[in-house]
Image 1 (cartoon, rainbow, N blue to C red):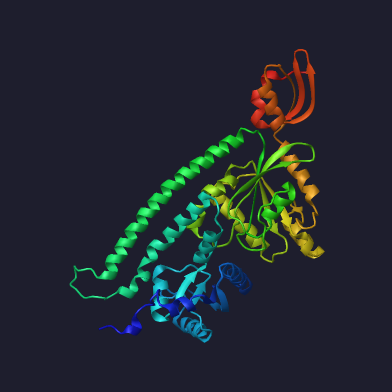
Image 2: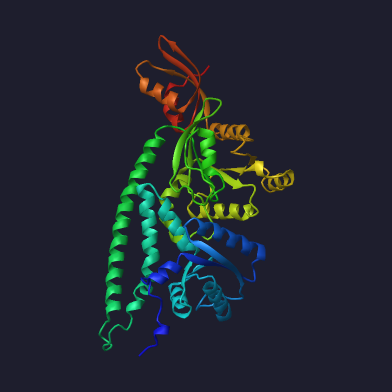
Length: 434
């Protein structure tokens, strides 16, 4: 008979559940990492965990030469972390690095502690913040994909519940197989539903493109101030909170520039280092707003000591989703929180960037001028004579072009305008030369 002390945790035990809301955080510093870099990631994990209501009672930065296949860290460090958790009455260890299902089971069996990683925390945040049907489905798909290889630990409390020969399956194995089948069926259904929703979004995007306006997507690291910028420029009320992943769903607003020219501005989900690959895939449809945009506005938190790492992460994810070739306007936000030295260093690293503060309004006029330049870069100035029976064409011009002058004549309406690229071909038939 097996020793009960060798048994993994029972996830339904009330005491296990109570202690699982108190955690020790563990960051890893490899030989190629500086202590500052590893600490910055651990601090970011702290902020992520604080968003899911878990009480953090301590943290450890573990220096390792190589990853242990059994516990991620060596046995000595594992015992040290486990003792720290017991001293603080914690039942949960949260790693900044990804854990395999086997490593999670080993922690539960050997240390009697639940172990999860940054990916599960990010997924939990996404689950609570998703609002639109597409975002909900995308998160559900990622959650099911995360859960499938980890089911075994949920039923390990039934292991060896009954004996039997080699061909006889025990109760735990039978329940495990049933649950795996249910999850695979659910994954297939969510994928079908998601395909339908993505098709609907594509239709909406196609309809929006009928309005011949240039499109700009705001991208950047989470909590850099993307939603605040959208609100400041357009006067909209998108949630803008000082926390990671405050908003997940893309929001598009029309922005009228000082010249009268208009554009479409979209706020997108923020990026984060070590973003779970399955979430990048799951949110690909949402991030397609960035792929489809004519221009990208890359917002960087000027006050962050990790701003260059954050910028690299954003550009890397943009490349992964196929938006790496889009023209980019770099914006250094939160300038009001920085001194002249920080400003000078950031501008030296990003000489073409716009320095702004969404809180004070500093630099927004210069940013609008830059948007004007981009929006007009593909425009062509034309003089048109629109016949009186072509009111539909005249309406399209007023909706999507910048009208410089309009005069009714006997033979039609004479219009002088900056014509965006999407309307140029349709307008050439009415163009006149002076």
